[in-house]
Image 1: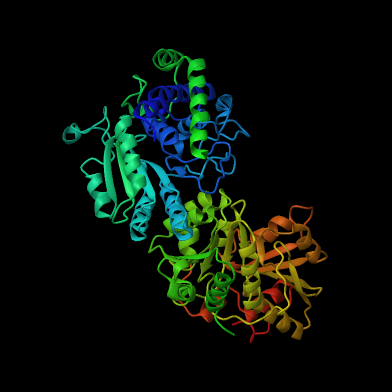
Image 2: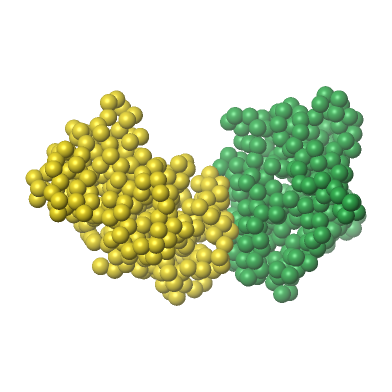
Length: 315
Length: 317
């Protein structure tokens, strides 16, 4: 039996990890002169909680058959995932510098044929949930107990294929499948604000789902809906635990996580032009002041945590 | 002779019995494609995706990722057009072990019209790296290709016609991916074809022979991979090559033969018979074969013209 004192000691410092991952995103995109920033930053707290607190995975054995599966359906946020995978021990931190380069394992969009640890290749939007449905269906068919997680963007779910997958997941009662919607309220360009949209606008842009009750839509399609603040670690962890525990009517779960696009970098927060941008030298300096951690200390603490976690899982 | 879709459905049942990894995903057409045979025999491994072919492909990729061997059931056109993006990213680019079966392929699919007649699938699928593109001529070849595809760990596109076709290959036939199959040896012209069109080409060969014209017949069942050297070798010495296919003359077998033969010095004359840059239509099989020059009689006339021979009036209808 673990005491509260022990478990709080073992609890990873999500805030520090997320800050370091965000800093890696900014650094990498700046040095590679390509990539996305807004989306990787908005989902970062969700991703860090997943990879350091929830997923049953073995970085040293990324093909382990019983691992939980994770699919980044919003594949343009790849650098966010690579940063977390690096912190979690799937690849050396230094390799992030190869992002978007020829022959790199870290392609502009996730390529599972190059990088172990990726459960799907994504990039053309709206397709990841279908793969998650297939994996969850396969797990059900073979009696495997792992859980499948799919991260979607709220702009991305405008794609019709997503709703084909939503129907089938409910029909086959895939309560071993959880979709997370990174509800940052912005897409690459979208529509400008107007007089009737100002209450829900982010900056000068309209919410992709303005006038639609997304939770009600998923519910109507037969899904269980959990709606949370996607930057509140307590809420995120609770939602993950509930999602994994399953649903007594065996509905798949969607976590609608309200987030801020560009979160963590004041310049970028809620600004749609930071969707895909290479920061200027001046902006990079501001990002350094806001985000640069004491890297040596943080790296030490994450590797210690990794060792403990692996020991825990293997025990 | 039994319909090719029945051959396919029956073989699926057999694969399902022999290999528990076999699963079938349908987009609400199983009673047309005859995947319903599998649904009846192995209901626990038959998945109804409803009318949503894009998601079907993604779910198939997911099932493949956890060790299953998914076969897909819908009409060709809905896969290679509606679902081309997930096929590209989730199957071909991901090297997923998914067997995409386009049923009701080619021109002879009943009176369905241009919407359902897929005359571009080979061009689309052949342009994609890392997916095998297979076009069986008859029952023997379809069964052999299905055995091969089941054992092969990777993406396959299999083009299956709806109806019965004449048997042209020996029961002892072995499918070798990339191989080309010379079926007749001649001197005046080489006829190259794929799928059940090869049966009509063999009939054209006999008609030409009756008029003293000696034709080589080469069957190309695997558009990708392709042993290009083997194709060049069997066509060597021929000054006139005629390709025929139930497909657009752009990008399918005709395009493939032209690419291969023009890549190595001076090429022979290459005539491509197929759908000449127009859409299909609702019509009988005979109407469509005649209109697009694919019947044995039309091929015979075309070849005689190409050889500068007089075409008797009774042949030229």
